Length: 159
Image (cartoon, rainbow, N blue to C red; front, side, top):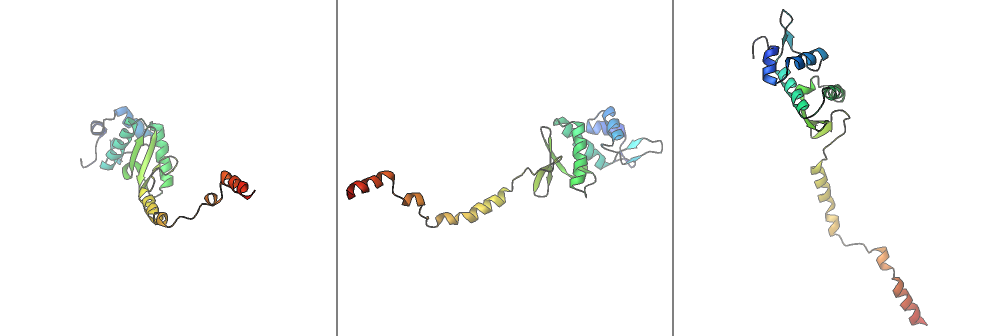
């Protein structure tokens, strides 16, 4: 990395963003550069490049800039210790939904709704309940009752 960071031109070559996109994202605060030169030119650090590439991949996956922005705002609420979600989290885009891989699960970046079922826990629960299937079956109440035809035969025998 250059000692004073990457210039906007270098960042555009690395990330595939246009100078216009980069400027807009800087102006709107989507990804703010790590620093500036004495002349006021943006200088981006390595983690800024990660954030820009992540945002670019989300765009390529069909997620709008507005949705990315809303996701980032929501994520700072869900995960208050996360200051820079695009650099710190693993994100997955499926359609217009952005999922966050965090801990042992995944959740929707906007709503916080969990998306991954704890299959290993479900397996353990099923295994725990399986021995109960080997126990002798309790008689079914309905099986113990005589059928309608059987009742009729008993009545005719008694007569």
